[in-house]
Length: 190
Image (cartoon, rainbow, N blue to C red; front, side):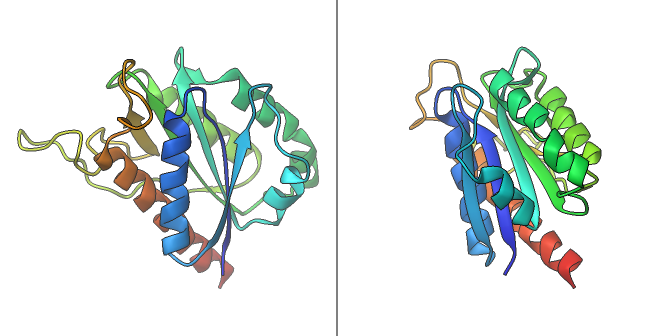
């Protein structure tokens, strides 16, 4: 059974909902998945870095604020220099997800930040592997409506509560990302 660590920050609850969907997908695929929420001060719970180092895969998540991840996530990334020095996350599968109010909102910059972090750690990046829902018949309730290939992207309108957004298509995209990470982690474990 693969162990999956989902490390994320959520400012208003929308990204937490996306993280839970990633978690659901990983568990449904047979993994032992654990959510590690970065708090408002940019800290993880005690023992989280050791648990992340013991995982087979690390999935990163943060809302996109001003074209990049939240400062709380960046604090976590900076604090990961200790496992980096020990090469504790090397060859683990990595993936990422993000959420913002706008359709684009420069979400890819956040995914690129996660990718760069993963490469600093020597990880193997996995994208969504999903075709986009890009015809006139498609909308927010369809899988990969935002056309995220490098990571799972979600839209939560600025006036939507976490109960209203992300919408079902974005949450299913997140579940499918969690599932795909488990599949790749199992392949690398062979």
